[in-house]
Amino acid sequence: MPQDTRRNITNIIVTGKSGAGKQPRIDVLKEEYTLEQLSTGDIFRRYLRIFNEYGYKKSLTDFWDTEKNTFISDEKIARKLSNNDKDIILGLKAKYFVDKGLFVPDSITNALFEAAFSEKKYQKQILDGYPRTLDQAIYLLDLIKKQCSSIDFIVLVDNSDDRIISRTVQRRICPNCGKVYHLTYKPPKDGKCEICQVDVIQRSDDTEEKIKSRLNEYQEKAVPAINYLKEQGIPVITVPGHLESFTMENVRKSVMDEIEKLYVTT
Ligand SMILES: [Zn+2]
Image (cartoon, rainbow, N blue to C red):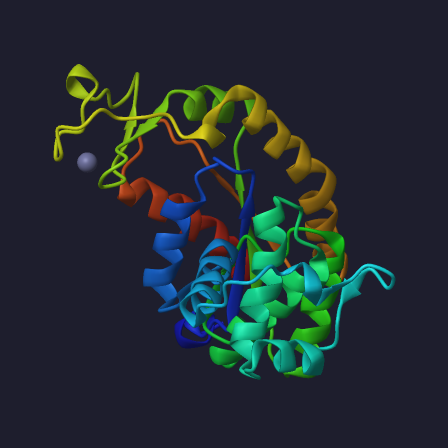
């Protein structure tokens, strides 16, 4: 296969356990293939912001039809909001669950993802954090087919549970600038951020209990999603999330060597 064809990527999915080390691999892929990162976390934050900026202050409970166990129709939502902007309506649906601390149903995550993906014309994206359930994976493949787009391959960043747990519980961040420290590998001097001189903190998500629950959720929900995509013919490339010597050059090589094999064997 000629070099140009190989570099002409439509979309890639990057998956792996939370804390496996996805971001440095995503950074490599962005650069190698001139792709953008489409992250579910960013999509949610964006639609929540759109809704918050609209400034609707009343309770959102009225938008939920308890009998039918779903939202009232978009037309009714628009009338209540006195606005029919579809992004604001999507933002409202996301906020409804986030405010209640409820698990966001796949139908909402799918709708938010589709809206953001369509803005990108369904191409040149690295999907990060999506699909994370079997239903999302089925939805994604249908969408890809309908839009005549494609997923070239999935990059699975592999790492052991033990390593992820020990790495994450020792993580500390600066509450001011967000700089990340590690008690063993990159200790904050006197417990303070070297830039801001404020005390670094442990994120509430970084306790052992929360990490283990994220690892379980990955196993139960994300693994079946990836298996489904693989069965449907999308190649899965496994790359190591842990390197003996962590340099960007080594990260790049560990990712690109595995991708290379894909094109040699096909
Ligand atoms: Zn700082």
